Image (cartoon, one colour):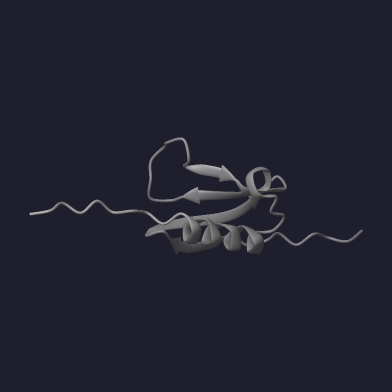
Length: 77
């Protein structure tokens, strides 16, 4: 019987915040590690983007933040 290797989690910084991408129960999850709670704290990338591996999940996180950059408010003096 072949043993399945457990995919290691990957931590990356994208959009100015740290993200942890990991696989749990066959689902690829991205967790925003420095936020507490919130609607988008943990996102199921298997459901949202169709990813099947941690490597694909990292790629999707980077792609999303590239297409949707955070806009910082600049106060005029």
